[in-house]
Length: 71
Image (cartoon, rainbow, N blue to C red; front, side, top):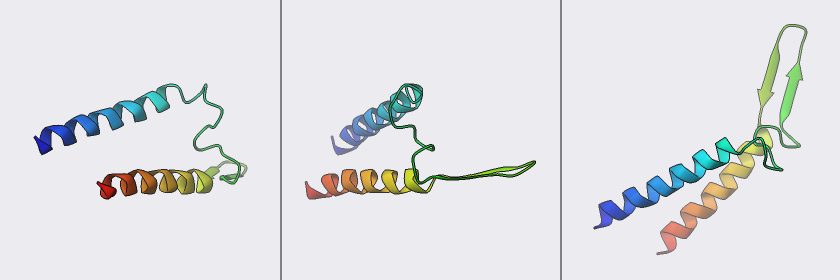
């Protein structure tokens, strides 16, 4: 029963991630284009480093994992 529950939760999480990616253009916060993300545009190159996006995802995932560990 534990393995089945884990698969259902994992499926729901993957579906939620897919929904966020699918609707990403319509969301007010665009991941990868937050204030604080570093973008360098040269003459022939462009470099993106999503610093704030990484920090935001880290905080959200840490909170979710903390909630699962509490049980």
